[in-house]
Length: 473
Image 1: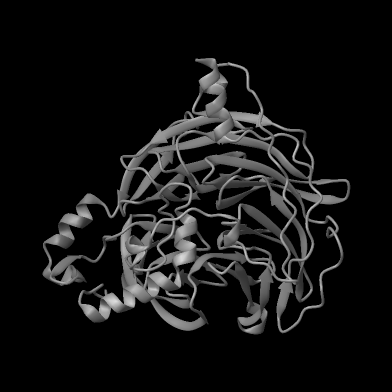
Image 2: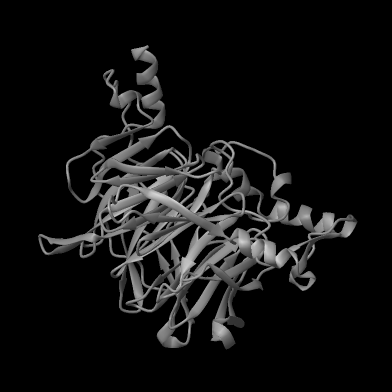
């Protein structure tokens, strides 16, 4: 692992990185301290600032989306209004249909499994929701639950303290989640600490065992057969874990800066996106005794701005990449991962991506969610989901709930934000594009020039909840 270093030369590099990514760093800290992404090693030096309308840029080809206002509502004094969580159900239609408002902090991670939704935040609690009602919860020893992945009855959570915790659903009572271990295991740490060859340099004059992450876990991913767990960290590495015995098979020094996203697809390939501005492709090789070896296959992208999110559409064989410049690049597997174009729909950084069917959704620091539909060699902008009062940090889709209605395939989409809420949307896959048809694709670019026709019926912000709580005292 590379040394972060000291001295004048390294300070100059750090200052350069801080200046280069200052705008995005300021944005992420606009609503309290945010630790979702590491944009450079000079993150701590980035000054804190509030986001104003001057942050937005405008051009004729990239007009501001139409905003839908959130009304201020006086809530009655009820037990639910004073609870840390409450649910507001809205009429079911395409668009916003519900909102889960929490007072525990920013929402950093979401995972949907069947009819259950798992939410992680800066608190120590992982909440489980069913039909917009709290179904269960379990508590970790560390807050900032930055990633959640589900492999059958096991739930893996990645945390700011660099640890991965493992939970299992009780077969007798599905509402009970028991912690059954952590990665690396205590036994593995003791065994590795006794072997000098298992130590690597993490900082100048500081060594650590190679199976342990030395900084925050930024993301988790599963192999296609769910036999391997991938963990990526701000320590610039990703590690490979065998789920059956919790063994760390490999640690890869993958990037020159924090790894912000990792996923597996396309027959065993692994994709990583980093604050160093690159997207890399790794080819997995199986070694003796079930060990793995990941070899760098190619670098798809190398740019100045940070890579913040990755997503794969398995059916269409497309890889999507979100960046701090607000763009979504994509590559097509059928064309040997040739660059297919750029989706331009956000004013600020793309913070999360997800795909379902022929749709791709991007959540952004501009508080909005863009919905795109893959059509032939291009993409059509279907809508922009407006309703959050802060950057959209995570997205999840409830696959089980997908159904046909009026000739349209509808999905339930969840979005988590720094406004401390999870919003629930109904998104139609076959809905016609809103507004005028998109401009003809030029130089591999797809532009978002169609804005939504969605009605925000009712939504209560965290500020509204606090105001109502004060009135009731």
